[in-house]
Length: 202
Image 1: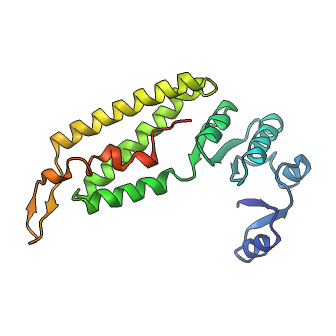
Image 2 (image 1 turned 90 degrees about the vertical axis):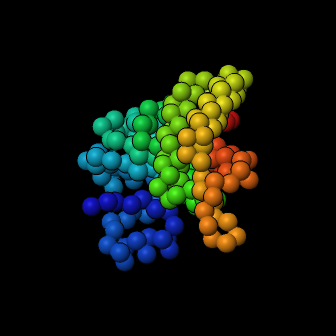
Image 3 (image 1 turned 60 degrees about the vertical axis):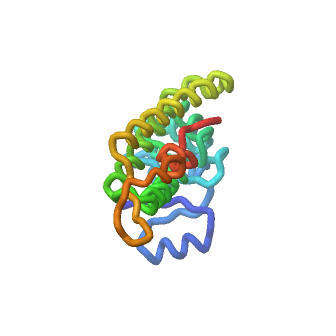
């Protein structure tokens, strides 16, 4: 069963009603982590809203409970880099998937079949994650980071440009018939639609 460390009293009451084991207090306190059973736990989920306490919790856990597998939520790309630098291998960015699902909906609205829209979104996700790992060694070197990020974005543009040539979207005309519409040329470019989800930049 999961054990929750929470500093919001109202949230604690709600969690207990649903049967969770909850401890009140600051998760960065080593004594509270011990009482909550961190030494016996297999996984620690770090879902702290503020970046500094999140990193502090990871540091404490890595030092005192080295056998714990840490799964962390990253607020942004810089937070992701800092977690990765600390040896955290299971990191999810907070807004990435919601941005991708929004982009998928946009692609469908612009004429892409649902399966293709999903495939493009997942391809973009893989590219974004791969870029993060490729850029991670350089995240403290801004000029290098920007240069590599731009190269990665160009690579993605080329990938999606070829995808569009191979599989042009099918648009609905005013009378309901389907046509490959040249008017989609700029707006339907998936790399542009998905850009806000994106290729990580500093």
